[in-house]
Image 1 (cartoon, protein in one colour):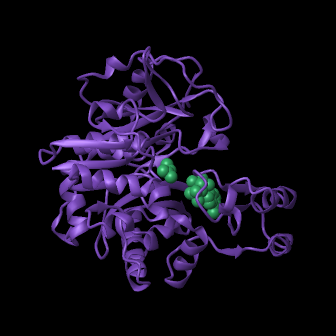
Image 2 (spheres, helix red, strand yellow):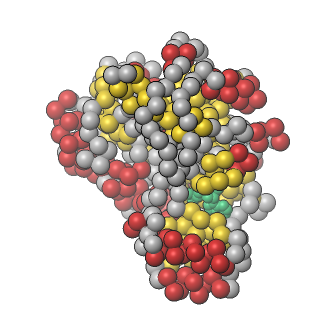
Length: 423
Ligand code: AMP
Ligand code: GLY
């Protein structure tokens, strides 16, 4: 069969790698893709938001299955566009992707269906938000309602900071229209975990757990980013936590979406905070995590095509998801200055070191092929993943492998997975 993947990041590279392993697949296309994805897929210069061109391309090439990796097209309704054209596509429809597209929606959904999450209020009026903050408990969390590349969340320690935050989101519109509405929520403490799950509208089956490192600098300092590195599984996501989440979070979320007339098909990403009072939902995403996919997919034993087709056909209950009994760590190699400003266009050396190395992967995020070779082309440039028998070994292997790569202004965190030493 012929598969089209939509997106251009490290996540889509991991998806392409996974799809390429399926013996059902003869040809993979990726729109727009990147220099690393080219190893598995023919990359076509169509943007992820160009729905008409994507649909025309899929029809013209006789694509059997399209997989949407990114949040923007999902929230914008790309799945509906494919379905209307009679094409098979993996991902939630617009009316379900809203679970990521609007934090106010997802918070209201959780409240209505008693799914554990931080207490909150939604605001579309700046003055009312400020009034609420006058008597609030600090620290407190401000969130732009819409998509903001994982950066629309501000943790404020004082009223002054929160006032500035309201200004940034609602007045200066730093996150654009994403800030027309804002969620103000209780600050939670605990361990974070990311759990990705396949969903067919009724059944939800979780993949192995992971943990991201969202801040730019070591010791969880610096600004929030799209994610600087991940490990899988999370030792803090115990059997007990998992059982609680299955009973009170995952299935209730599926049932809630179905009851609202928004059946959820695709990958649902639940960001959890494991607090002293039990696990609570931080956020939902309507897709694989990036860079969570880069540690979860290399450990998955199933043929990803079988699982995705079962989701589309509503027979996920027939699938037994299986993961290797090992661990993986992904270290993001970024451009110095990310997530604020950084230079691009520096040649990347050492990529060939990963060729035929079992258990080591170099997933490209921001890279571009030029006549002189592959160069840096983004804030997050590469995700270096390695497996190991346990997290410690995987962590050592991943950091060893980051040494194989050089490029000017190379920047990475040195403490990805350090928390596992405390587990
Ligand atoms: P989100 O995009 O909603 O997952 O938020 C990004 C990051 O901000 C999360 O991964 C947490 O580290 C942090 N965060 C979000 N909401 C809260 C909260 N209520 N309490 C503490 N930290 C939070
Ligand atoms: N790594 C977090 C995300 O994909 O949103």
